[in-house]
Amino acid sequence: MNIRELIAARAASDPRLKAVLRKISDGTATLTDTAYYSDVYSDITGKMFSDNVLDLIGAEREDECIDVLRSSYDNINDICAQAQKSLDQAAGINIKPQRAPFPKERVKQIAHSLLDPTVSDSTIKRRANTGVANVSKGFHDSYIKANAKFRSDAGLRVYINRETDGKCCEWCTAMAGRYSYGSEPDDIYRRHDNCGCTVIYENGKQRQDVWSKRSWTAPEVGAGAAEPVRFTSGNAPSGAGEPVRLTKDQAAELQAKNMPKKSGKINNLSIDNSGGSGIIKSENLKMSAPLQKPPDFSKYEVKSDLKAVEAFKETVSAKLGIPISDISLDGIRNTEVLEPFINRIEQIQKETGMKMPALRSLSVIDGDETCIAGYKRYENTLYISSKYFNSKDALVDTLKEWANNGTLPQQGKTIRYLAEHETAHIRIPVSDIESEEGFEIFRKAMKRGLCENDKNIYEFYADCEALDRMGYSDKNIQDAVEYLKRRRKK
Image 1 (tube, helix red, strand yellow):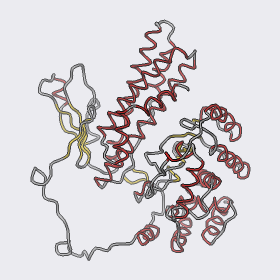
Image 2 (cartoon, helix red, strand yellow):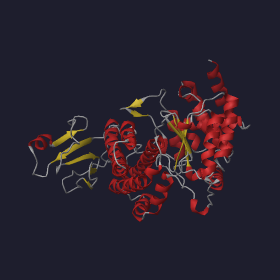
Image 3 (spheres, helix red, strand yellow):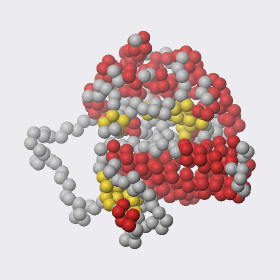
Image 4 (cartoon, one colour):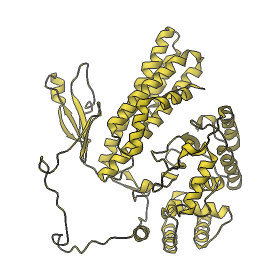
C-alpha cells in the first residue's frame, strides 16, 4: 500500500471519524463537527506520512507530500460541503458550498523542506508530521473564510466580529469590533501568542467562531428578535392576489419559459442549477440525481487490483493524450468500470477530435453522494466517483434504476451512455446552449416532455448529443443535434 492508501485505511477505521461521518449521513453534522474531523484526519495524515517519509528517496518524497496534501484538501472540503448543504437546507439557503483555492505555494514549501540535506532525520520526520498536519488543518479554516466571502458576494448579509476576552493588549483593543463583510481590517484573523480574542462570522441565524468553530444561534422571538411578518390573503400588500401553488412540471415549464437569455453572474454568483437550487451553472456539469438516494454500496463486491490501476494510468495517458500529472485515480481499486469507460472515450475522441481535460477521481464529488461523474469547466477537469467506478454492478444497477424511474433517459443504462454524456458536456460550447435559438429549442422540448435530468438545459443538450451518437432519435434529439451541427459550421 502507498502512503495515501495507508492514511485512508487508518482514517476509515478511526471511531472518531466514523462518528462524524454518521452525523453527516444523518444530516445532523455542523461545522463544529467538520472542524473536529479536520483536526483528527490531519493528525492521522501527519503521523502516517512521518512514519514512512524516510522510505521515500529524493524528489519522490516531495511529490508524495504534495499528493498526500492534495488528497487531504479534497477530503476535508468534501466533508465540509456535505455538512454545509444540510445546514443550508435547514435554514432555507440554496447556495453551493465553495472551495478555497488549493495553497500550492504553501504546500510546495513544506514538501521541499523535506529534502533539506542540512538537517537530521528526526527533523525531517517532525516536519512531515506537524508541518503536514498544520497545512492540512488550514484547509478547514480556508473553507470557512472562502464561504463567508462567497455568501456575502451572493447577497447574504454577512458580518465579521472580533471580540476581546477583556485582558487584551492595545492592538487587540483597536482591532475589536463588528464589521460588514469586506470592510474588516486586513489583520482581522491575526492573533499573537496567548491571544484570547474571538473572530466570528454571522450568516443568517447561525454565527460561528472562525478559529474554534463553536457555533450558536441568533435570538428567537421574545429573546431580542422581532416578531416575523407573515403575509396572508387578509394582510398582503395592495395588489397581491391569492398565492398560486405550481406542480413540479408546471414549475419546470415556467423555468424554461422565463430562462435568462444570456449567461452571466448575479452579485458575482455564477448562474447555477446544480443540486436542485433552481439556478443553472454551466461551469459544473455532473451526472447525478439529487432527489434519489445513493445505492447501498456495502452489498456490492469490490475487487482490488491496485497494481492494475496504477499501470492503467499510463494507458489512459497514452490513449487520451492526458499528461500523467493531470491524472489522479485516488480511491479507484480496480479497472472494471474505468477500462470500458476510457475505451469508449478513446473511440469518441477519434471520431470527434475532442481534446480531453484532466481526469481525477474523488470518493464523493462536491458533497453529492449521487454524483457519478462531473465535468468542471472552470477547472477543465473531469471528475469520477471512485465509489461508483469500483463496482460495475453498483454503477449499472444505479443507471438502470434512474432510467426506469424517469430520472435519466430510458437509454441511459450503460457505461457507454455515461462516457457519451460526459464527453458531450466537454465538447458542446456553452455559447451554443445559451443562444436565443438554443433556449427556444429547449422550451419546445420541455413542452413535449423530458426526463428529470434533462429539465436542466445543459443536461438536455448533453443527452441529445449522447443519444444521437448511440443511434437513438426522436423530435427533441433531432432538433437539438441539427441545431448544434449548424452552430459548428459557423
